[in-house]
Picture 1 (tube, one colour):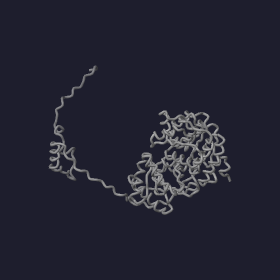
Picture 2 (cartoon, one colour):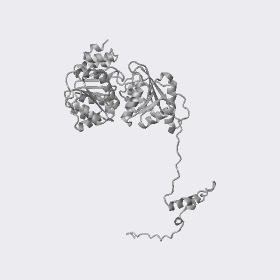
Picture 3 (cartoon, one colour):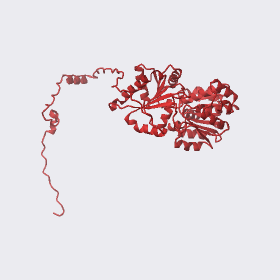
Picture 4 (spheres, helix red, strand yellow):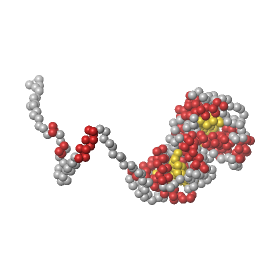
Length: 456
């Protein structure tokens, strides 16, 4: 069996890996690291939770061990689709590079430009960024990319799904053609393969699991929810969700609950909290400090249930997540693989429940087609009439009349007798007593004169 000591990594990197408690590399690490150390481009495809981040972080630190960064010219660049994933890559770098003198900078939204500019001005060996914030710094003249030796696109399929293709193409055009490039992803759509053929040169393709497959450590279940009425679907799904969490009991130590819409994330989180659950929300509209604080609470265990949009589906590494609940069936089948990949990590067992209504049939079919197997049907919990927390609605205060004439009109309206209701058996004729007078008048029409023709 391959060990990290067999991979020709920098001794300082090996020391940090050992201190982190790792001895044996995962399949993606064992296969990708040797090629990366040889300077080859790498296209890595592996399930989520298999250690893709370390498979490019460890060789990067080794390759950058010699050399020095210049001001505003980073030596390597890591692109990530979300702030959370970028921050996680930065944490991995801090863990494995702590015995080296390499420097890093994290460029994400929600943080002031001034602090980030100071880091860039000092010169950084590793620049970790989201595409939008990276281009913001470049357009402000604060960043030069001619010195990039290694470039990484992490979660490549998500980068393309989120509409970052133009940004990625522009960023690649700003970096040297001689750079070394890594593409890592859990899924590989045909369009991504076309893009990688453009950006990578003679890349080594490493596929340690069947494309778009799900981990065998995850027990999957599809829960069919048939709402009593269409307008009650949302509330009854919340009832089913709470029943599932209660049914799992102590085995559900913590869980991530995914919703398709940001507004639903807040509603589901508030509903859970009102019923006594320890829940919090995270989505793209929240302030970065709030998002970071919520994630820290979830990692530390002070928060049990994390209700999230797909911003948390990619790259969120919390090894001890016991359950994933898809409150909504994802509309993109690839997102299903990433969502449930938040559990069953690092060899642990996990459970993933997906709540589906009859209108979700096409999305479920697309997921099953992608992963190549049906999702096992689970016993649907009893669906009682929604007992959501009552929402207090304040009675509107009477509006004071603006002037004397409006007050008189209101007084007349109050004093006026109510119109008599039409007899039940009597016919309803036109507009009743409210027919305008001019409609009841008769008019004499002039006699019609026919026009003569030429034949007459």
